[in-house]
Image (cartoon, rainbow, N blue to C red; front, side, top):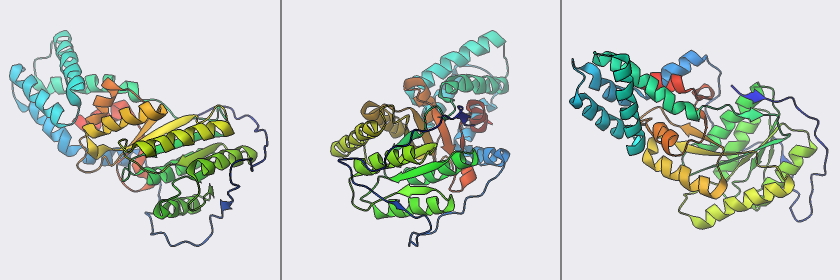
Length: 342
């Protein structure tokens, strides 16, 4: 769930600011030629958990097969180590889980492999608990959320889904299309803005930092609860583009000295240990406050969340298991551990 502070009245300011272009909001009802996106529909969380289990079934089956024997011995732990590494848990998280599991087995006096699997769920749940934190909206008005990620991670689609979630919680959202040089990104964001009846600040070919500045200024003037900034996708090795991200953050701070209040990174759950490398690089550049992990619905192994929890425990606000709106949900450590290992 989202956490909401009691909202404070916003101080109106002028939307135009010297040194930045006055970018006019694009009417959300304006015609456009973007390809159709899946129509978002709400569904019960139980159905979503079933989808998560299905998405993680391949990995979960590989780990669960370790516990089909009749003895708790060194061979079981060796097989479990291999299964965790294959699940992209990484060396540090794997070693932590093995050591913690052995301690739990000793303390509980477990004698059956099936009981060891239940203890592993508890161990994984304990590790992942460091990632479980609600996204807080309302402490600042507007709450400025900057969203980054590599191309193909599902960043713009996640922004659309998150916008609907926020709207359903009663928050008013202004979108900033700061991915100004990729027409498809702007058009996709227009589709989501249209469906969510949200306002959007967009200008083709404009400086991304200037668009972000104007959006934050407009959000303050219009009393919006949230301003969400969609940035251009880039690899952390593209240093000039990473510098542009830093520039956007600096310029946003000129519009609101306390902003951005959240800096989110969208990562593809299929990328395994490379996702951890992305978290490190973007965190070094921007100071991340949260993650959205997408595409845990196919070949994704899921263990990368354990690696993140052990090595760089930045909160995972949401995880996604598909393209529909209900396929993006808040992260719960116990739900994830049970979905992976049951």
